[in-house]
Length: 243
Ligand code: SF4
Image 1 (spheres, rainbow, N blue to C red):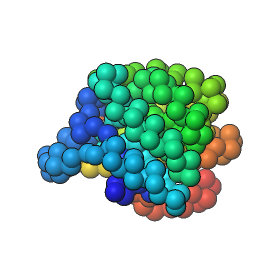
Image 2: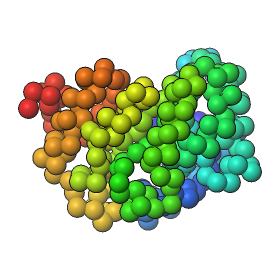
Image 3: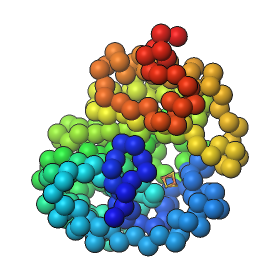
Image 4: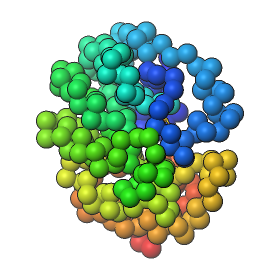
């Protein structure tokens, strides 16, 4: 079974074993990680079947190590089949995570049937995506798709990860999206050196986080600051808000 290494889920199902988006902050760019990931042979349908039989509620992300909606999903429909199987398991919370949520809207009928499938996307920047995520659908289109899902009664979530100061306009992303995003995840830039980025300083993180957290509290949004980012800051959130 795919136990999840991310903190917002207990489990994960990887559907495809490659990702077309070419993000320059992707862990796939690190040779050691890539060779490990390439050894994984996803069995998404079998895993979905096993989860469908499992009574104990799980929180399952589809998918974390690659995007579940690459262009070929239009033809293959593999992610759709995974969701169809999971639709028989309303005891679980399903968190879909894709940089192509417009294509995921095709499966909104299944999200409705299940009742607890959340549609999520990642936005790390509004204005620098052509540099950071050159082959992914533009962030405006991703946010537009979340808005559409929200208007259709689907819960939505937004992963703002990795935060890369000064590229990530964190507060602005929240300001623009809070009307239709139910849950936010904020995370640090991991493996900065291996990826060729300068390591962001604590002060840089504080600068972008402080106004962003103030907005999340003002709009009473559910959110999670991932462990690694908290560890870097070495502060708890209450203390952070006072600074
Ligand atoms: S969408 Fe995720 S898995 Fe795909 S290239 Fe970007 S960071 Fe990597």
